[in-house]
Length: 257
Ligand code: 9D3
Image 1 (cartoon, protein in one colour):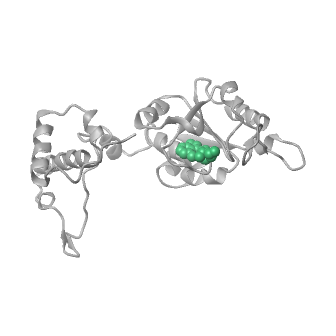
Image 2 (cartoon, rainbow, N blue to C red):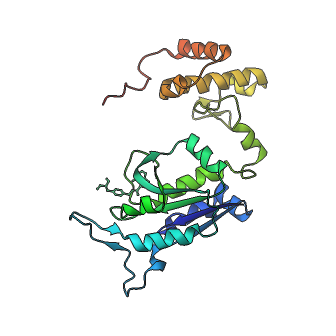
Image 3 (cartoon, helix red, strand yellow):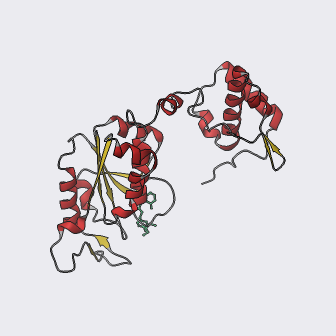
């Protein structure tokens, strides 16, 4: 059982991911154990105050150190001491599949979700938190980011995915964008399923899929191809794709700074 502890003022934003779908089933089957701890349960003043005004002035409020520290300590109780511990923060390292794999290879996970304008900075050092972002856009707090981390990590844990899906993680198209998928009917609104997929020639289907995955990656996310050494077959299939679709127009514009 892989333990996950979430420190958050709004657990109701995280909980849906633990109730439905792949993660929901993993929870039901006891493969992961997600528990929530609220900083509000660690304050005793009449208004149960968890936030305060920022030193130095400015807009918004800051999550107070003490309730957060006490919630983190409580959440850590029973977690293996080697567990990674993250503060979800727009200032953090951006999550990628490599980090997801590292987290899933560990023994447990602590996630701290901030709210308001942020948390008292001292909590990061004192509790040894790593800061983690889920991408270059602005959220209203860390809870949805925590849900993203839980979902991405849970699907890598032993037994969470069925045999078919876990085999797919090791497939010939890993590190590439997905090839297109189709299901019945064969023709709808004048749109046809590619003929090769209907003919039952499994080797031809495999080559078509690799070609599509390579072609789409080349068109949409060329940086993924640069990070990958292509086999002779892959190079040939990508050349076919480019010959059929033509270069130009469809590539990502160069990144400017
Ligand atoms: C624009 C940044 N701040 C301006 C002073 C305000 C602010 C925006 C968003 C302060 C906190 C937040 C809350 N964001 C998160 O907690 C967060 C986040 C995100 O916004 N983007 C990507 N990943 C993450 S992880 C946590």
